[in-house]
Length: 330
Image (cartoon, rainbow, N blue to C red; front, side, top):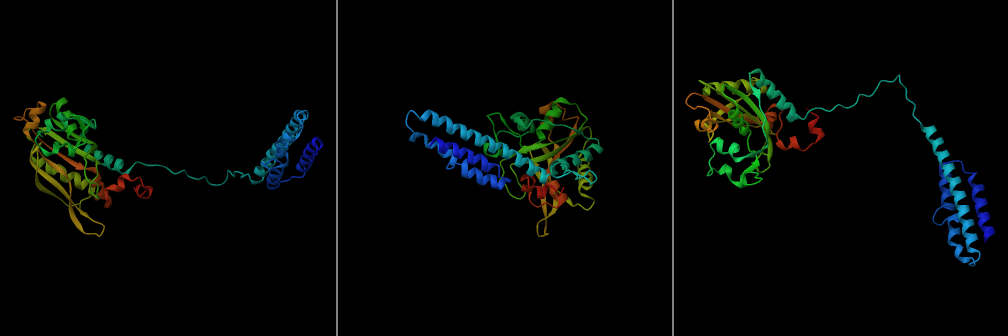
């Protein structure tokens, strides 16, 4: 049987010299080096030898296998290199280049930038604040008492007894008034969180832009004029909007601002954009601003709803689904 081992090795090496392509090489591997191949099977036959012959048989079987395997791998490397050379693509530097795809800002980011630019032209500065707020800035300083339903734990994302995810960017207005003396003219963009039921016009996380003006002699006429200029600058001169009487604990008098929107069928209807009003004197007292001397107004608009009105988007969920077919349109 030792002679048979030697013959198998010589036959395998001789046949390997006749292999000229990768397909034939694979057939060779199956015949000699696979689990049931002739060279591999030699190792399983060592047990048939007598105890005295087994060491020599094992050494010979391993020698044959190593020689055939090494020769196989060398030929495989050579054939692979030859195959790559055949299919190698040559670069023609005279051909026009391929312009790489460029990313761009999300439609929400684009909208925020445009809004800030409009208010910047009106003389407003920009303020930012934390998204995790305490009850003082989110409720108490805004004249929202403990009995108000807006403070219900089911209507907020509380972190502990005093901390929660802010429900409005009015918290930034409080922080600005705590740290800045009038006159104040500021806008505050950012994300807010409310456990709303998700539908075409509501999300549990959305973006708000709030504005605050505090000075002597400020009236509701100033607020209405600013809102009118802002809406027509952002949405065009044909945009239709209206005031609707409302109530907010932190403004008095208060109003809702509605925009006329069209649904998927083209039917128009009024959609709430946000609230506004004259700053309640209790809010001024909470932040240390003299309510006898100063007056002010504030408003807060949903940024997604403004973008929906401008670009004809009918479902707020599209902003957050990360569908490139939608996002690449803007």
